[in-house]
Structure formats: structure tokens, C-alpha cells
Image (tube, rainbow, N blue to C red; front, side, top):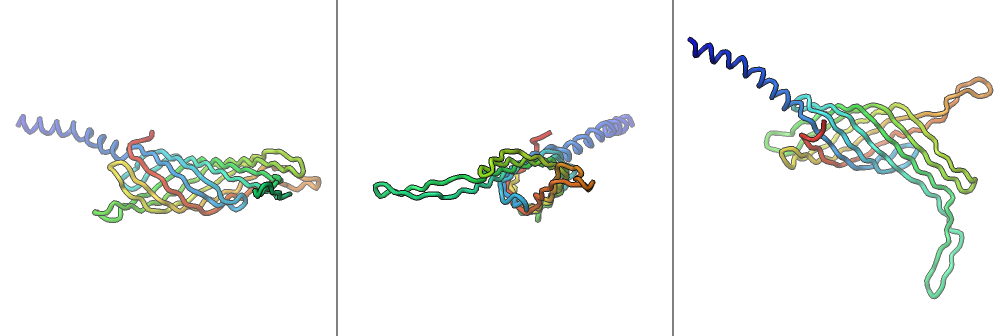
Amino acid sequence: MNRYLLLFLLGLFLLPVSETVNAQTRSRPYAEFSIGSINPKDTGIGNVFGISTGRRLDDRLYWGINVNYFKTSYLKITTVADSGVGGINFSTKEVELDFTTRILSLHLLISYELKLGEDTPFYYRASAGAGGEFIWNNENNFLEDIDRTRFFNGFGWQLTTGLGLKISRAGVIFADILYHNATARKNRERNERGLPTFQEIDVSGFGARVGINIIGLGF
């Protein structure tokens, strides 16, 4: 009788310990690093670098924070003269425009991951995120002697889908396609007729990225 009572009490003690271990396993942290390109509507194609970190909710769902940094540049260069010396040709060029756009996105993220069969290392991936968009547009117009930086901010969201390949117990490399949607504004004011006016930039567009997801790394 005492033996059964001891086993019962031991079971009561181990049950919450087991549940705690399972919960910790399910909520293990992760970190994800990616590089790719996006083609926003108003800026043109550029490179994007991303970092995500968060925790597992269960064997398929993750939540986290995603930070993306995008940069693109535009140069307008004109050839004004060609010359040659000793059989070597030279071109004299002048820079008329030099524009650089940088976008910092801070999103809350929910991710889904599904293994494509018991005996396969491949995973289907999808994610959705939303948050703030912060845009800096550095403009040098040498023809009109204009040098300025315009700052925009607004709300944005992003959807991704792709495939992952498990390469170790903790690592998955992946390739995703993505759609990023964001329209940012600045200078919200009224004109001489009392009508609201503002400047707007649309940085929505499709893109692609590759990277690695590491379970156990993160907060």
C-alpha cells in the first residue's frame, strides 16, 4: 500500500516537471538570417537583408520579430566626351543624379512550417508579418544643385512562402518568394485652399530570399 502511495506521489511530482520540459521544448527559441532582393514600385530593385528571432508555439507554428534592411541606388551618368591616346580610348562622364533609398522594416511575425512526409528532409514554409516602415531617401540632383534627405514612415505587411531543407538537428536552409506591401507618407499639411496635402512613396513589390533557420538560437 505504501509502495503504491509512493508511486502515486512520485507521479504527481513528475507530471508537472514533464509538462514543463515539454513546454520548454515547444517554446525553444529560433533565429533566422536571410538575404535576397525586392523590386518596390517607386524605387526599383534592391538588396534586402533580414533577421528574425522568436520562439516555437508548437511543432508547426512560430512567433517572432522580423527586421529587414533594404537598399537601392540610382545613378544617372552622361558621357560628355570621348578621347584616345596611343590606341587607348577614354570617356569623360558626368553624374547628374545620385539617389539612394533605404528602408527599415520592423514587423511582428507568425510563421508556419510543415514537414513534407516522414522520410523527407523538406519542409513547406509560410509566414505573415506586419509593422512599421521607415524610409530614408537621399537625393543629389547635381543639375539643380539639390542635396536633401526625405524621411517617410508608415504601416506595412509582408507574406512569404517557400521550401526548407533540414541540414542538421537544428538547422534548416530555405528559399522563399515574398510580397511586401507598404505605402509611406510625409509632410501632412494643408495648401493655400485648405486642402490636405502630403508626399507619398509606394514601396510595395515582389521579391525572393534565401537563408538559414537555427533552432535553439535567439531569445
